[in-house]
Length: 266
Ligand code: NAP
Ligand code: GCO
Image (tube, rainbow, N blue to C red; front, side, top):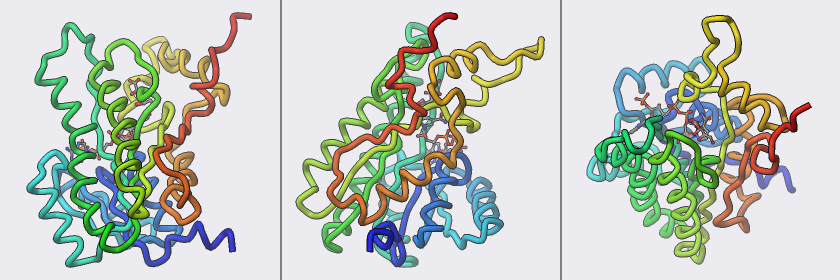
């Protein structure tokens, strides 16, 4: 039954940085498809906030405080999850940061911090879950990439470098572990309404839309910003048996931005 192949019943899904935003939406969708949800965030109060939000959505999620950049803490968390919940079947590397600074003004420390969270951490997380996935005979890893895995723009050099690297890490995990029935794919969201992009959508003092907001609308055939809910179906697909022969693919969920030169002047 084709619909059965989208079910996540009996699966344990870990979504990083999922107290709110894209991670929360994806985790909620995976739960709706039947998965048991585990998530982490960097601060206890965020984890508590997340647990309350999942509860309100009718989801009994388990939350852990863990900085995904800290390999020792990650390995400890994975061991704790395997003991308390079960082996992780689905890992969504969602936790991420961005620093919008012109490159020549950006400190090496700032550059390194973005690379650490957005690229090194997905490596650490994947390395921690793959051995048990191999033993179990299957696994799904979904890396949350970006349009900046393909394109650059002013002030996001570190972020684009990290997300470009994350695209290639995705392809490499697929190449190295596909033989163990592990599929590693990416989701490349376009411009989505979350706290991370709130500064780009601020209403101007004169009440007009932020110039960047208008720019994105002109670049998006769908003529709207994405919602976190737009990412849920693609995530359920890539987390389910329905995508068992999809590997090393970045699924762009961007309203068509990457296909479009931009609205022509009237
Ligand atoms: P967000 O609102 O900033 O949420 C990011 C989450 O990750 C927060 O809960 C954050 O916790 C957590 N986090 C950050 N650093 C962490 C660390 N070291 N360890 C554990 N958790 C950490 O971002 P978002 O917009 O939902 O984006 C989620 C993912 O989608 C990111 O990878 C982002 O790059 C990607 N993405 C976003 C868009 C978009 O338009 N929004 C588009 C493409 C891709 P704190 O609150 O404590 O920082
Ligand atoms: C930016 C935005 C983007 C989005 C996303 C686009 O400053 O350009 O934050 O980077 O977050 O990654 O796919």
